[in-house]
Figure 1 (cartoon, helix red, strand yellow):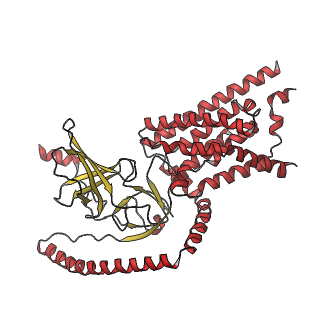
Figure 2 (cartoon, helix red, strand yellow; figure 1 turned 90 degrees about the horizontal axis):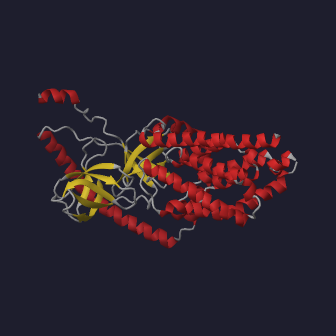
Figure 3 (cartoon, each protein chain N blue to C red; figure 1 turned 180 degrees about the vertical axis):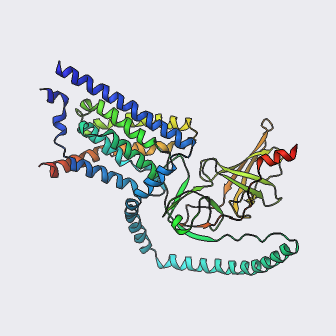
Length: 169
Length: 292
């Protein structure tokens, strides 16, 4: 009974190797250089993966790993260290606290949860960066947010598919 | 009872974690934005992800090779004739330049001025544009192992692109002149007026700050590096003045400059060596003593 309430039994269906592989793959895709419009609207695949695991297997998500991935992302982007970590950590916290509710919805309904959370956190980080002396980069700062959210159904479908194909022991 | 404790335990731990990591993130954002303490961490991690980065370049390389493969004969012929024409023009200019260089050398010797420093150069290829929307930077494929030095100026065929701001063993990061608050000491080519051009954080726009409203600066003026400061060699074009706004309610004129270099159009940049023979800055205390 206790285990059911905690909701961890669902998460146990997701084996570690798929989690690790998806995180590595997302990090790798984020490193592929793009130019022009592709660069401006490129989605952050790590956001998708981190959110997916925080919602579907919250007890498997390590805050330190999420934080560290963010630092690596900042180093790779050449941006101010800490902003991507803050994005990932805040999103993980939001996703873990709301995971029981979000799981009730289909991917399209989950999109409507992911979008406001992502926008809220991005606005917060933008405010913080403006405080330490950055200039407003323009509305294209939010384009990746939109593209990331639009990819949510596809990402959750793909991870679910890989779990059902390779995940069963 | 057991359920209750488990419930509260999880909630409080997530709050603590949130506070702990948020504090660290905000601290590192503040430190990195204001000071240089995190550069060592950045360099170390950058080296660590370099192999992965190199592999991540493969898809781009394949795409580029594929698009190169699809170039038509017509395009090649057009490019060839254009290049021939350009070469003809530069050959003409080089003849003039050779004689001018000899003349300049003789004149400098007569006037007993020091030998002008000829910077050595290194061709580097832009490998990618970082995805940080807050800065205007490019990463090139030459680093400290190739002899690039920190602060080295980068130029293209048209003019100044920027300056090396972070140096790694195999790559280096160039801050573009359009990067916010990136200063370049310049001179107006028409009258020799000295000024400093700053990036404003947007592509295709720079500004000259702190020029009095009655300054002799006009639309169409060409700004070239002055060589003052020792970073950029003299007489490299930086930008053209596109707008001068002399609003008398402000102490300074608003001068908008369009950069001449266009890094979006090609993949190669030229990294120049820094002027190592630049005399040291005068000692501040000694100046004070002289005043008294």
